Length: 203
Image 1 (cartoon, rainbow, N blue to C red):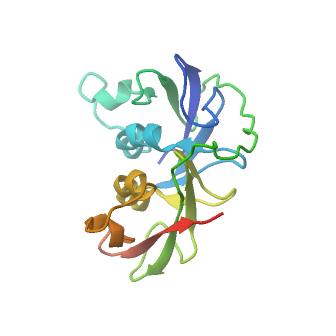
Image 2 (cartoon, rainbow, N blue to C red):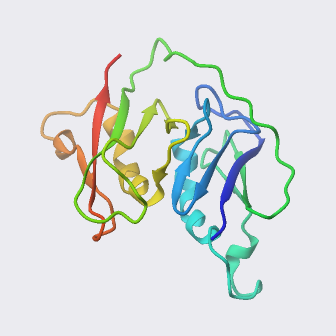
């Protein structure tokens, strides 16, 4: 399998992340686990556009280039037509000129911010996790930015199971909404049965 480096190469509009993503920002994928360098983050909505191709790009493609479209996928853009943040997917061993990474300075929430911070943590492993996830593994969502502690990883597939709930869980949920009591998610692997817990982070 290849290790992937996914880096912002160009911003063709105005990124609305706070702080905005910029050329040089990147994350890595290795053996199905995602890692982010210290001081870095990935926009949650951009990540959802990238997820479908990452699993395929990690693997050697046996089909000829004229048959399999994954051969031709090196760039993915975020879903915001006003932002158009362009990412390049680089596999280990492939040459590519990428902008240098410089950590974004810490930023406080805007004064009008209504989104709550969330922490997603592995609370229990009920089987044999092939990604090596363990209780206490975690990531944090601040506004629309996803952070993983430096030098740690988070399983791509467990992360994907949590993604659909996170934007709604950041916002006020009315009484009677089923999402109000939904705080636990199990990963898609029935052999691993990794249980994730979503909790609000209070300042």
